[in-house]
Length: 408
Image (cartoon, rainbow, N blue to C red; front, side, top):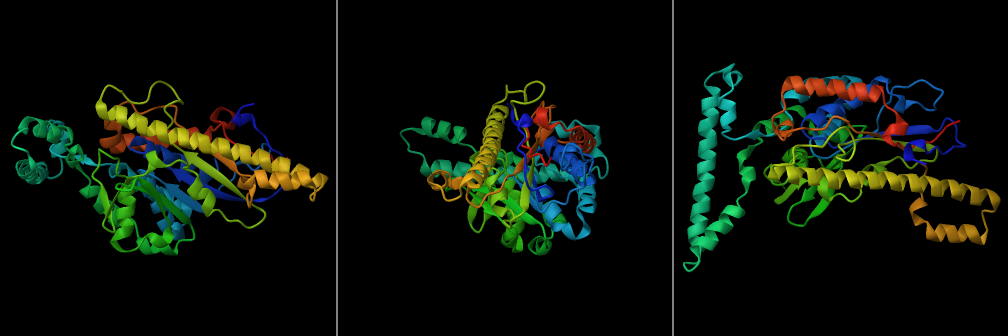
């Protein structure tokens, strides 16, 4: 029986549901996630039904979590909680299309595009001058380091080493993105928000992930956390948080759903419902990205690692639900039996747990080019928001492989 067909009956009809949103997107997929969220908040998605016989209902998420550009969406929704979720997502819809990715420094294709000169015709030339200055400074420093550290007996080998180890992410400019994050995210509102926020980034030196909570978003550090979570290793410069370098932590997350599960309300009678939106290279129509380019290959591996970790976490939720149902049967027969005590010792993962639902949303329309990540246009972003909304409106738990708990 597939996950989408799995139906675990509950004796707690009408149990309060605690909704959590998990974002993870880059490029157009970040817009797709916002479209899905809009559908959930407006109550048009079948995923928000309490039971198959009831109509979809509007939800009010209590937890927002994110990696990659999804970290920005999660932070924005948490910071705007006073305005209400629907108002916040409408503002996110208007703000997301133009500021979701880095700019490629001195990109020659930009200067061949006539629309690049609209607005202030001098701006492209000022940007080019700034880019040239930035790159020349870096190159000068590297040449100095090369001559200072190169053994005179092996200059060619040292030169090859410098070329192969060159940090090409210097070509990525996120200054406008960083400014946008600072201007649009109010850290004090995050700290005071009634929404729980969980953003994950990876410590570059230690190779460990860290999940940041509402209380961690203070001073300039808070904005750096959001930017660091969007820093794809090798494509976007590493970001400093308290003198340590951090990057997007999606690839290193063994259990992507764990931050949300740990943040849940543990009061009896409250059931966690996760809405997980992510790219899955093994799901949908056609291949994800043109994998002929080196970065496309690396990015595909990045997505494979994350999506498989998410799928494994969803499978664990399903198995935990089954274990909890079996535990209920044992308790009903004899709560003090030896079998019950043995079960408790062998199934520690069910301790303090209640059954959970997981709804997953994966676009069947995959990114076709690396430009979909780094050069997302406003019109295309709006289109992908509409696609996400439509997909959520037609959501089919059986096809999507959701974990549902029947209330009948």
